[in-house]
Amino acid sequence: MAHKVGIVGGDGIGPEVIAQGMRVIEAAGVELDTVDYDLGGQRYLKDGVVLTDEILDEWRALDAIYLGAVGTPDVPPGLIERGLLLRMRFELDLYINHRPFLAPDGSHEFIVVRENTEGTYAGEGGLLRKGTPHEIATQGSVNTRMGVERACRYAFEQATKRRNHVTLVHKTNVLTFSGDLWERTFNEVAADYPNVETAYNHVDAACIYFVEDPKRYDVIVTDNLFGDILTDLGGAVSGGVGLASSANLNPEGVSMFEPVHGSAPDITGQGIANPLAAILSGAMMLEHLGETVAATRIRNACEAVSAETGTTVEMGDKVIAAL
Ligand code: NAI
Ligand code: MG
Image (cartoon, rainbow, N blue to C red; front, top):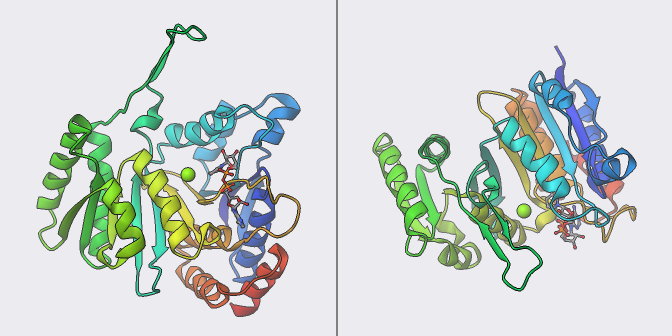
């Protein structure tokens, strides 16, 4: 039976790269039963719709969601990010953000497991006395035992299928409350995985190691904000953000797959966006749907052409030729 997949091309280069992802999936012989959702900044400018309860209900019945990128410069910052992306993560409880990277020397792949529903992105805080000389902005970091534990547990599970090593990345020396909860929870989960080796890095040090010594990493687990920043760095050091793919997972529900990059308004419509990150995110989706053979073929094909250049469509052609 065909897998039922919701497609959100989104804004800017989003639809351009997703179109190539869909071509490659079809060429790899996987049949998808797709439903298109016109959402993002452009849709909002048309009729004010960001995301509806009805759409969320439809999504809960899907096998997966495949998303390009959302956000346009003409829409106030945060409106689409919070109203669509973050709301999707919260309502579908996409609590794991799983992002694989190839080490810069090509030696191995490592993954960042980013907690995806809490931290400073949970929306706690507010503005007081806005617009006055005495205005105050607070933005708290929300960390629940349950949220931290399920992220850590997922990371350790992943490690057992890889090199049996997990690094916690945080800033426990300064963020002593959230750091304390993360550290204790991490250590308690680690006790259930005696064969998995553990390490700890402060996030600023991790930035150095990402560039200078990524060999030390197998699985990294970290909070929402650190993970967001660290994975852009991961993309940059491992072949560019044009290659960085990601999965927003609810292991018990519907999951969403998207490239790490955004809608790239600076190159929209020029046909030059690199579609490999979107194609690789498509491969992650196929893997999740149980189409492991097709997923491996697509990953290998992407690797074979990753050093090549070309237009968006030409890169799609090259991947299909290399399948
Ligand atoms: P961005 O990732 O869109 O662009 C950063 C830089 O990388 C730009 O110079 C862009 O041209 C380049 N780039 C990105 N993807 C590329 C690709 N596939 N091929 C070649 N070059 C590529 O990040 P930026 O500029 O911060 O955000 C633009 C918009 O995208 C904003 O509205 C932002 O909120 C949104 N965004 C959406 C995300 C999502 O839908 N998950 C994630 C990140 C940003
Ligand atoms: Mg980001």
